[in-house]
Length: 326
Image (tube, rainbow, N blue to C red; front, top):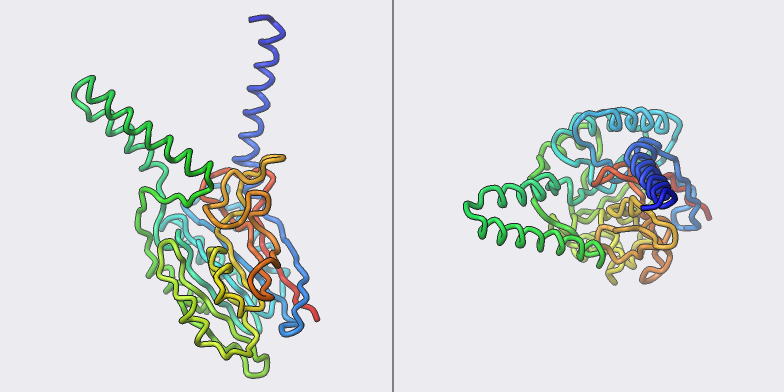
């Protein structure tokens, strides 16, 4: 190897290491406030606070930094309505952080409403997935068995890589989370969980909010939920997974709020998101404002406040404020 080639390889390795370190610890605690102004005459005058995908887990410096940013931002906001679209938990170790966030919620004229996400039901454990592969190989008793087991586990990893490439849904090594305790905690702090339910917020406002259960780990009933809403009522629909927004029945909603994609987490120049959590949304736009839905519905998909894997690149976590104007 020539000296020039060695320098190039060293520089490449240092650059890759710096980018990886930045993706791990640079953007994740740097929560931003993202504002939208939407023209919705039937809902004009309302300010919505949209929070999604906190993915709280065990205590660490990222979580503490994120909670400080959450408190700082929320103390400045004066929403009319607070709407949370799921994935509060990464695992049960995050329940205390959920409570700290709920304690920081500002007062809202029309209250706070939530739906659950897939992670509020289970944790998808990468540790168990990869650790189990290693355990299977170690438990093989003969060289031929070890070779066969290693090949089987390698095929599993290749299948995972193929799923990521195809942008499929990923579901493996699901460990149950304490959903019941999470719901009780939300309700204790005045957040009403709309699990396939609709709610009339105010006779004066004539506004309804409906929430649908998660389509991956829950039991969504979109048609049954929307049947509870008068046909001419202004409606905001909450769904953790934005795929439900493309169902024909969802066209009744004036505004749909969702999360789940985390904005892709890692956005590569020219290629877009590495993975959008297996939704219909394209890699080039896995979050933001969408007006290409059935009917006249508009949708906001949040990049979320946390993440499933500990990396973000060109996709910082966000708190969303939506001002509805005539």
